[in-house]
Image (cartoon, rainbow, N blue to C red; front, side, top):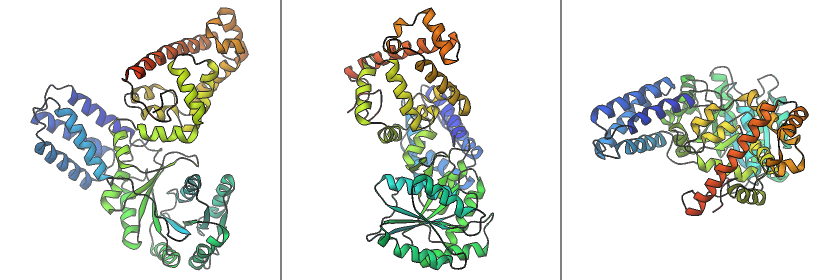
Length: 450
């Protein structure tokens, strides 16, 4: 996952700092030196790193955290705030035209993920009640138009292609006629190159001039290293960029260069791609990303995902059963199906404060899928009575379940034991919730609702 290496380094640094009874000047110097090295190793721009370290040091001195009992916590807060500022402060919403359609032009180098981002953005806006039209204006990359048409078909969204000889005029015409066809948003996928050249810039500039977009978004490959900063600077010099999209943010353990793009260009990051699926794109929240980087979790994003993917009444009913330790294997199976829609389990656990370490112990990729299928097979091989009352599952039943699910008795034993431990833990959480010691989070499966 992107920024994982940076997150691990910073988390370890601050854990050591928290272990000190008071923070001295030497402690602060050591911590900031580790932070500086971690940021540079994550490929954050040198100038940006220097500015961030200077800001932290100045604020630490101004707030008199040295020799304070809570000095370590204050420094973490100062670093958090400095990273949030580096990333732009607050989330910046996409512009919306007073009179439809809203025109959004995507720019970027070839391979940055523009075409997929166009489809993801259209899908995101449709979920918000919009009616987008996709325009395939990348007439230079082989099969680019076919790719967008295929993605549009997969999403059930219309795609229009332009004539290679009149790209700018066709884009403008499609944009002006979109409202009459019932579309309130037009998303234009423009052409990219393997490197920046004059012909490329002229063509995109012509499209922007003709279409007069409300948003001109630069799609930046989070894995591109310092090239991402250089290309963003070059695009910003030629185009009236209104925002950035961090694409492929799930593919690099470092990804620090993408953190530098906003600080270097001054252009806000508006969206971030979090995976390969067409729903893996989110509004960019600087404070939430800073929390993830510092190992603080990201409860708000987790809640939003839960509300998007889970049936509210079902989640509420199952939450009550979970916290009263009355849930069954049927309930557990249903929860597994819901969680699978929200993304990899490891990524979800990282959003919960304190569970990032557990996430690292879980298998990833194909192995995680195999483990999930194994659990589903075991539960499916149980009788209705066994799923309702796991106490019935004795030795002979476990052998039968193992044979029916294509697993081993050890696999069945482990699942039954883990299920019993989970019920015990959930019962404890239920007691904590009743006593007010557990936060009440809206929409979270397995937790009480506000």
